[in-house]
Image (cartoon, one colour):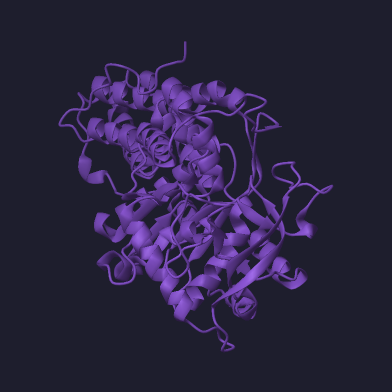
Length: 488
């Protein structure tokens, strides 16, 4: 339960800088932001840590930089800023934005690699060993790929045939950890949500002969990355580098933030990186003798019924939404469309109607009606002692049911609008005998509005605070301009 929770650590995946931020990146980040804001209100600002950032090494980044005639560092500097700008525009309240090219991260990754090199597996073997890799490699995924994962001989994500690769690498002895990873998932030591993804990972472990994974690449293949500390012919493989960010950002192993916040209470990620986070990452943590995180996975998105694709030209920047709707409305429109964890279709074409129905005619109209009647019929005076800091939708937020939390709040909004229509206080007020009835009705509506505003704080903190400021003023007045302007 929240009241016993001493800390809460939330992460998004770090986003790869071979592309610009889009609505898929935004969804994961918005979900993390809502949860961070919710827990800050429950356990205090200093007890919540929210991490996001960018993944900046690897062959794809070097290739993308080369195409633009830039050095990789210059390229990553520019793209990383586009993510920071997007999150600023969306009012994302992260505590730290990590970049894998920063010196602090690189130094700690080297320390992690040295620890792994010196460690032994549960079966007494070396955790890290040298070997030859013979197999398939997808440059688009930046990963080695199994024959069984191909569809018609091609990578299912990029529709391209992988390269045949033979090179000397250093490997992580995954085989010695698979049983422990499986047991951790089955016992709940490693949380994977939703249940369908948990079963998917168990199926992956049970049905596939998962090979040991490479932790390095030849400098000839991948010139852009962190040098392997004991072999100057190798660069650290991007996934080991990237996964480590969740602990390097906290100052592993001796930083006060690491000691306070690890393990992560909510690591959000998309389905396409499930294996790395649910199999490789726990194995690495076990080798480092560290506790395991909780993993929360959302499904793939389509956009108005079609797969998001630069070729189709239907990749939407979060900045476009913010420009049209503002940051808080954009977050509401995205989160209110579908439940977390499911594969979903983002219906951008429905956003204008939903904005008008839910926000203009729903919440905005309720605020206008209630404050206008309090101002006119009660001279703006309400007894604030009846206001309770209750919230609806809290249990849903704790259980990552963000859409359902919003639906619960909107049920209260709808109930109050119906209450006004049925009671018709503008008619009741004409008879002096109904004065107490009108006062009681408006006090109940004002109290509900206060609950609604508090409940909306994790989702729409500025609009919520605006409502609270109106309700807690010495004299309530109808807002001079609508809370939500009708779209032109």
